[in-house]
Length: 368
Image (cartoon, rainbow, N blue to C red; front, side):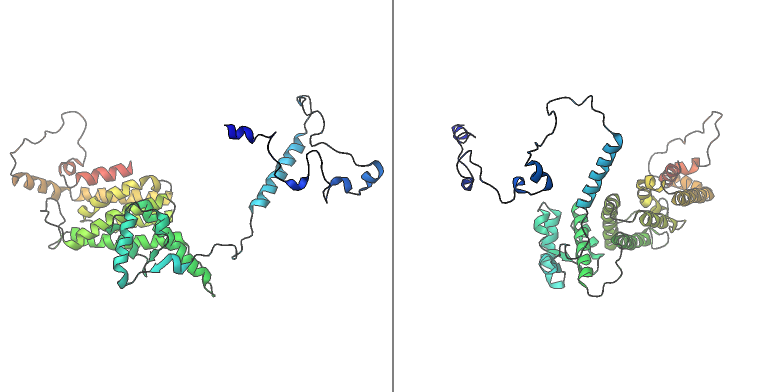
C-alpha cells in the first residue's frame, strides 16, 4: 500500500516531460484559439464549456420533442450499421493455409491417422489438433473412423466443419470458380448415403427367409461380423446425425424426408428391421409435425403398417398358440377376456405377441 501512496496523483511525476513545468501550457499547432473564423475575428475566441447550461439542475420541466428523439435514435442506428458493415472483399478474408493445417490421408499415414483419431476421441485440445487435420479422399470415409474410435459428437462435428473449411479454401483458390455447393445439402446427402449403406447390410440379415433371421419367435444366433460392424456404425452415426441436425449442420427437410423414405422402403414382412428403426422415427416425431406434407406421409405410413398387421392377425394368433405349446416354461392360464361391456380391440391378438407388441405401440404413439 505504501507504493500506491508514493504514486499518488499529487506526487506522481509527469509522464510527458515535453509539456514543460506544471501550470505552464504550451501552445498546440492546431488549437481552436488560432482558428480564423468570421466569429473569432469579430468577437474574439469564446471558450464554450463541454456542458452548456445548468449541468447540476433538473430536466423534469424541459419539453422534449419526440420526433427529434426518434430521429436521433434513427441516426445512431444508421451510424452503427454503417460502422459494422465491412465490404465483402476476397482480400480481407483469412486465407486457410492448406499445406500447414491439413494433410491428405494415404495408405502410408495409417499409423499417424490412428494416433490423431485417438487424440480426437480423448481430451487433447482442439487447438493443437487443428494444426494437422486429416483430409480423406472420399468424404464419407470420415464417418467410419469416427465410429471406430467412438469420438464424442461435438468433437466429431468439429472435424466435419474443418473439412468444410478445407474444401471451401480449395474452391476459393481456384482460378475458374465453379458453382458453390451448399455444404448443408452436401453433408446431408453424404451422411444419409452412408447410413443407407449400413441399413442395407442390416436389412439383409433381418430380412425373413432361409438366410435371414426375420419372423416372430426365430432363434437368435451370433451376428456375422459385417452385420455387427454395420450395427455399430449405424448406432454411432445415427446419433451423430441427430447432433448435426440439432446444430443446424444438415438440411432439415431433406434429412427428414430421407428418414421417412427409409421406413417407407421397409417391406411388409421385415418386422425385425421396423422394430429396430422405430426409435429413430420417434426421436424425430416432434420435427415431422412442423411440416404438413411430411406429417401426412408419416400418418399414412403408420396406418398402412397397422392395417398390414391386422391383415395377418390370423397367422399371428396361430403362431402365438404354437409358441405357447412348445414353450418349456410351466403353462400359465391364459388371461380371460374382460367381462365388462367394453368390446375387445382388433389388436388384442397382436398385443399378446412379444414380437408385434412394440410395433403396435410405437406406430400408435406416432399417430397419437
